[in-house]
Length: 88
Length: 367
Length: 180
Image (cartoon, rainbow over all chains, first blue to last red; front, side, top):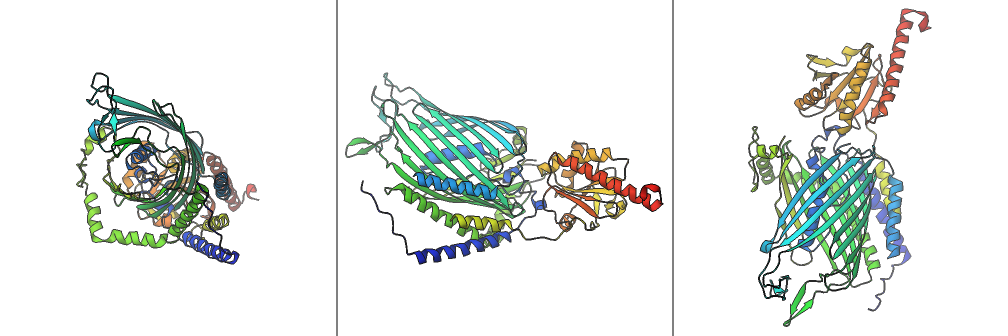
């Protein structure tokens, strides 16, 4: 198999400009997220319910993942790690 | 490849340093014994009993252990002694045939062991799967952190797998390595709904074919042969809402993109990971408009009617009037010790290499 | 990319400051209905002026709250003869859920129900459970967020400090040598 060359890097000035815009984007995201408090801690009665947890039943999720990978022939996209936004 | 792993691990360590605030984990200790039954065409069935133990070791540490047995069973098939009887004339899929002309029933066991330790905000998990011709191993490390009064949870995990494949009767030995990175964002949208979005990137390197499957081409059978390198990426979104205390529904949509890659995997992995990372950032940036959009969607009259139908549960706990084809009496379910009735219709499209899957779960709380 | 992630996460951490009741401020008065069978009619904070009050916001769906409440009941019994009251304000959507919990675990302290979540909102509670220790003059002196086993010792120390201050003030007001 012949080696495939890596794509050429753009000029340095363009890289700096791209990074600057990306940083602005990240700052905007951070500021936007910090104002995104939607649910107070005392309003989480329904969210704290076990059935509302995305990762409530790990063994069932594992079986579903195994079944989908076997039948669909693909993997991924069924949910990963991470906690819920509910209980303390 | 080493540089990819180094970069990913250093990113993980950096995140850990930045995020290293301890979260107290309150988990109920439990022992769960479950069994699943799955059946498919021509009498094929899979039974999966599972035993799971979850124990809090301290305020921050939770240990989980799970053992699962997958037992695949195929009924016998009649055929000529000593010759595999092709069930499918195109692909040549077949079952073993016995010397007497009547095949023996075929069954195969797979033992799966999973051990996990959660030490907030970190987690580590080991997976070991054993069957007569395949040994699978996977190690996963992860970190999850809450922000904004726990309205947002961000989680990152990295997995490394190593499998040994020894096809029965061939004497060959193959290996397969895999790496996967998963980024997940969970956000509480309102007191009754929450949203999870995430992205997976997985790279596979090694034997990925089925050693028993043949392809019928030009009058002859050839063994299946897949490329050695595969790069997969997937994005997904899940939405939970509980408009009333006793009823609710969950919806999810998964889209998977990817395919075989013949290019050197290292640069592809980095580039794909970078692209997905920025995609995740873009989702986060546009998240507020997305949230407003979802709220507007729920206000549509059609959606309101569907929610009203789901939440129409009578006070005496009779069967909820919703489109549950396999719903059973709630009183019987309660006697059986169930907390919820769940039904899950799903639609999946397996054409091509872009199989989106849409599923919805409807649940009814019994008490 | 790493620099971008670090800056994003650092900025996410900067949550805006919110109003509410802080240490040193006067506790806001309120009037709520009682969940306890022993107490009929609404209960207001001003009724308990002159006592040391432990004001706790809790809910049955919150695991640390369920761990904390029996401990607060024990504190109420321990200091029953002192001028000390535990006020447990519940924020469940249904009062029956809270009553059932109190009955099940035989909790006898004074529990109130914040039906419309006006009080918990006025105090701008940041975490469940939250515990406010109020001195005999109605001023908030200590605030605890969340619950862990070692919090109880801190509660006891602070309650004894506030009870000691109260008796010294009373002694000073009465002109006894202890107050000088």
